[in-house]
Length: 154
Image 1: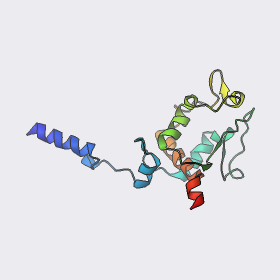
Image 2 (image 1 turned 90 degrees about the vertical axis):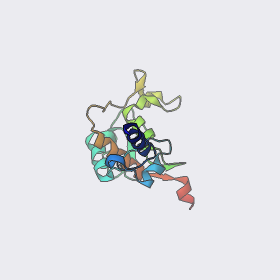
Image 3 (image 1 turned 180 degrees about the horizontal axis):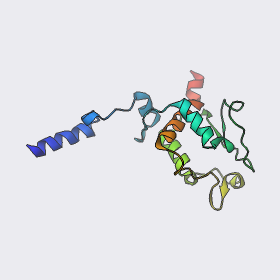
Image 4 (image 1 turned 120 degrees about the vertical axis):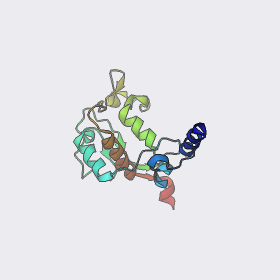
């Protein structure tokens, strides 16, 4: 009997049920991350505040907010603009990886001076300064800044 209960509970979790009050991600967040890494819905307003407070705008411009956020001051400029027109909206996991492990994927050859220092990314390691909630909210903020080419043609 006990084994059957454990198995039923496990199947409920595996099937995506709300066992023990687990909250299901929204359909929108599931669509943002088809590869299985899904964050809870964040607050884009708080994400923008965290983006500025953590000084992300010291190096990055954000599409559509060039005149609203502090201007990048990094020398040499990184030229890494976030958001804007893209073939697809980046998945949650892609944005999280770029934030917590920026050396994972660097830009093409010829741009090293702008983005690489000492063999890795020039981006500051914020893993100890940033809360998980900051990360979730910054991802929500950045998702709002992307416009897919598909939505542009509709």
